[in-house]
Length: 462
Ligand code: ADP
Image (tube, rainbow, N blue to C red; front, side, top):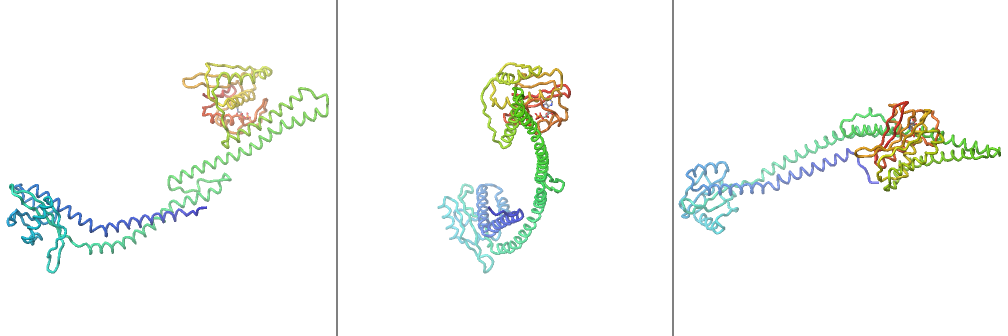
């Protein structure tokens, strides 16, 4: 398995890498590239100044413009006419003034040869005594009063070695401080993030027992708070599932025991008393065996649904035909039991469903309608109602109804309103939850309306 590192280590590594790269980049720009930036900047400045001046050569205010340009851009300007000797403008103690006539003439001709503008970046002048200074000169040809003139703008290039050395020295100090701060920051961050995670980690150990306590977590950010809430919900689900599991064992063993006792009892009776070997008694054994078979089938379906293994064999079929099939299954039984069973159909429609599964849902609804009815005149309706965008398929009964507070719970597995009820017909005790799962698998809306002591109406919309 790949080795996992703690959040603290990961955070520290990421931050340190980030800071080292960032500092490295800054160092590179501040030292290696500083000289280039500086020189490019100077070149841009003298080019721009020269162009501004050329555009204003005929301006009456030329002298003022030149003063402003030279002052604000810290450059030196010289304007010479073709005859060289005519000097229109000279300012301050300027390197350009040290140019000899010969040099000026050479510059003039080189500028003209180079399409009337040229940068000279290899000039050296005597600056302060004993000090040679590099300068950049930019020359451009313009016209004054229709006469050709050369505009020269120059700028001193100061060696940056000393500046770079100072930056380097400072940089080491800054780098040390920043790395130290990063380490502290990593620890503070990891403390904020890791502490509640560790709390959750230790508390989660209680989760399998359903004893996760959300109040033990001091969540200091939204994500941890959400995680805490999710785990608390999972804890509730685990508790519920645990309770349901216990109830399941109780219910299933009860539901298994009753028919098994009957089968064994009737079997022994037929074996011991030959005269009891009649159709009625054998039918009891067959019915009870069928009840067992239904229970086992339902349990298998539930586990299939839970493991996601259920497959729907959907096909286009007529809704009314499907309902007629279901009705036929119960018609005779209800007649025998004196239950008024009605089929109330509306306009037919083609539906795309797994008809076996949808029938299973309706059988469950009808079984319950028969089971939960203590009225003398029992009445059940299987029918449809047409709405704007859907058809509602329902099973109505005039039975015991369901209390308001139980309405939400009856779809839960093994939920029984009356734990002591006796079943009069085939049923598994997980009917509604299985029906719900099957309807959800079909993406159908389902529900129940009921009034205690009056009626229940289970439905789904298609
Ligand atoms: P079972 O009927 O085996 O208990 P179900 O899942 O089919 O299991 O039903 C769950 C509970 O819902 C029943 O125990 C009953 O209390 C209630 N219930 C279901 N259908 C009806 C109905 N038609 N009338 C009244 N109560 C019903």
